[in-house]
Every structure is written in structure tokens, then in C-alpha cells.
Image 1 (cartoon, rainbow, N blue to C red):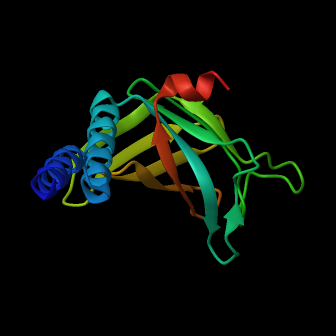
Image 2 (cartoon, helix red, strand yellow; image 1 turned 30 degrees about the vertical axis):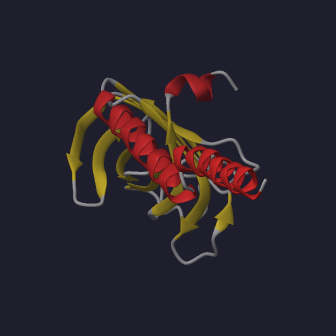
Length: 173
């Protein structure tokens, strides 16, 4: 009887150990998700068609502004860039007091370049709007988060922190 019990305990231990050895650890799962996100980000940047959606705005000389409740985006395509971003900061000329609607422009980029660095992709675009010329510098980190800096002739430079996504996701909203 004692031998049967010992064999049963050993047999059950082996079955349980085999079951646990097949499961992946949390660290392995996290690494796999990170690698998958990096592949998705690389595919978006390589296609040159994606949308930047801001979470926070960092105007020069002002406090950080939360943008999660404000609809905002910059749609990047090699043949067209469309911006619907809010602006907080100083306007120098060409903008009437109280008539400012933000950084809303659309146009064909004069310059559109993508470079891969050690920690991020660097995207530079220059777009001529109706009243101003805008220079957009976008740093896309490999996990999908991004920092966008927009400078123009008539306004102070403003930066945004956010994420990039596929274009279809933003148009469906």
C-alpha cells in the first residue's frame, strides 16, 4: 500500500510539473508583447501612413496641458499631412486675438524624411498651410509612443506627447 501511494504521488508530481513547464512566465509574455509592438510600430513608420494622437501638450513657458478629453491628431501621409491639434502659447503675428483655432492645416509636404536612430525613428516634415509654414519633428520610439514638435513662423514652438496608430482607427471614431 505504501508503494502504491509513493508511486501515485510521484506520478501526480510529474504530471503537474509537465503542465507548469509548458506555460510561459510573465516576463516571457511581456517580452513577446514588446517585440510584437515594435514590429507594428516599424510597419507603420515604414508605410509612412499613420496618425499621431496627442495625450499631453507641452507649450513653451506654460504648464503641461492634458489632451485626453480634446480630440486631436496629425495624419501623416507622404503626399498629404493634416493637423487638428490645439495650440497653447504665444502667437507673434498673423493671428487675431480670440480668433485662434489651433494648429489646423492641411497640405502636401515640401519635405518628408524618415531616419532610424538607436532608440527611435526621426520623421521630419515641412508643410505650407494657408497662412503659415509648419515644421513637424516627430520622434517615434520603438514601442509606439511618440513626441511631436511643431514650429511655425507666426507662433512659438509647441511639443506633444502621444502615440501613433494606423489611419483607419482614427477615421472610424
